[in-house]
Length: 388
Image (cartoon, rainbow, N blue to C red; front, side, top):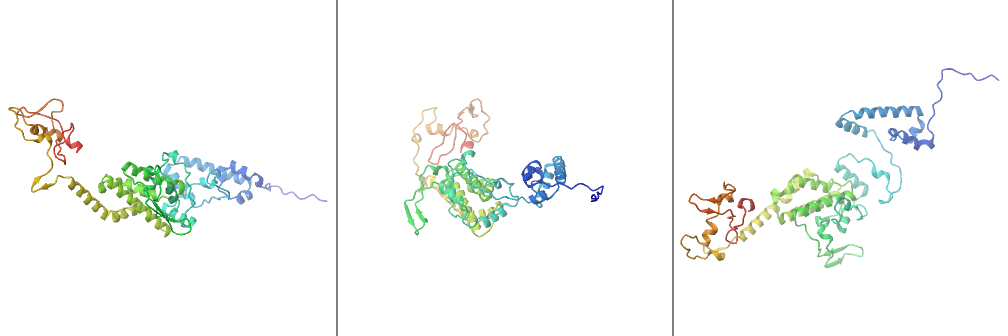
C-alpha cells in the first residue's frame, strides 16, 4: 500500500488551551483576564502568548507617560472593555462576592442614583446596624432609627437628630403610640430626640450621616453633596450667624433637603447636587433668615435697660451713690470711669510696658471700659476691642 504523500513546507498544527488548564492560564497571563473563555479556548497558545507580550510592552510604555495621559487612556479603554460577572453567593458578612470589589463606576453620581432606583425600587434594602463605624471614630453617632431611615432612600423621616451622639444615651420612646392598622405601622407622639445645639455637634452629626450612608448605600452621594455645599459656603455663617438659633436653622435646612431627595427618589429624579442646593437654600432661607434677624434684634432690644419718662430705671451700682469726695481724692464713680485709658481699649495706647499717664500727670488704668447692658462698666483686665 503506497505511503501518504508528505508536502514539505506546511506549518505544524497550532495547539489550543485545554479546558482543565484555563484557570491556571489566566493566572499566568493577567493581561488577558478580560477576554471571554470561548476566545481563549479557541485561540492557539502562541497567539495568546504574543498578545500577553504586546500587552506588557504597552504597559511599560504607559508608565513613561504622564498621569493625565494614563488616566485618559484608561478611560478610553472602558468603552470597549466588558467584565464578565460570574454568579455566586454573598451574605454581606463572612461570604463576600468578588463583584463587591470591582472597579467603581465612572458615570455621574446622579446617573448612579437613577440606576440604583431602577435596580432596587422604591422601598430600598433591608436595614441592619452592624457597620463598623468605630473604625473611623464615629461609634455611637447613628441611632437605630437612623439606620432604618438611611436604608430607604424614599424615607421622608430622615433627620439630622438621628445622628446626634447625645441621643444615644437617651431612651427613644414616645408618650403615646397610636396604631394605624393591624400591621407594624404606628404613629409616635412625643419624640424625645435631642436637637443639635452647637456647631461642633452639627458638623459631626452631618459627617456621621454622610459616612453611615456610604456604608449602607455606597452609590448614594446625596448627603455628601449637601455637606459639600455647606462647607463651600462656610456653613452659611455670614447669613445666619453662629448662635444656637443658627444651628437650628441649618439643621432644619438639612432635614428639608433630606425630604426633597426622598421625593425625588420616588419620582425617579436625580438628587440635589451642589448647584441646585444653592437655589434651594435661597428659596428656603429667604423668609426664615429675616424672621431670625428680627427675633435676634428684638431679644437684643429687650436686654437694654428700660426707660420711663425719659429717665433710666436701671438700678445704679452700689458704689455710684453721690458722696462728697475728700480734698485731692476723686470719688468712687470718677475713679471707676475717668481714669480708664481709652486708647488702651481701642488698641492704640503706646504705654504698653510702663505706667500710663495723661499730660496733666493723672495715672490711667489699663482695664475694659465696655458699658454693660445692666449698667456700669466691665472694668476687667482686658481690652474692649478684643473681648466685646
